[in-house]
Picture: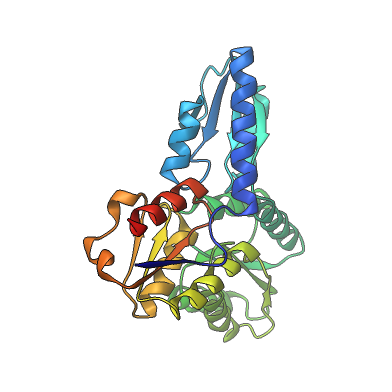
Length: 290
């Protein structure tokens, strides 16, 4: 069997930065006897989270009631400003690991609301990144901000707004991990009602690079494996692209999940999401080559 890696795969800049910040804080805290918490999963990869836990970084869903001597790491996806303010009010040491691209989206959303825009956000309503961005808009008392996950939702919400104010200033922002095709289709659906819609380019270049690398890879292989966490939005989108090609494809989180049928192919492609560590990619490639 021949294994071909995508030309771009694995940790993106934002994920690598978040992991390095968490590791550094864990080392500092171990010396000082402090506790370290991540407010929600730092990134969407179970192996990385397990490694961080072994270093003393504990994932929590709620703020500690009696924090004591502790640090809280803001996950790569960011958080709502109200939650960050609560952390500061409690005197908790904050390590902000928000991806710079996500932070830019948060700031842009805030600016647009303050400029009087009605906003559409293309993405998954329950995704941490979207929740954080919505928090910034709500803090500014946004008159209209809707999360739309597909063209049907986009058209429905745009029609509602048109019925209220057909002359509204509108803008569209996207989850940094959404695909170009999804984003363009949603923009067209809203644009049917608001031709002057401002489409803000918020898709991360790392997302585009990995998606384009996968498309090139699909032309060279009989089947493809997407390595990464199943909770990772950008990894799931890689799987969607692979499945649309018609080539046998699977998303796995560890080498033991490789389907038996994949060992019968002559050429297997290996791609990975932006939160997938090199160690996981190497283990899967080694297992295939056996």
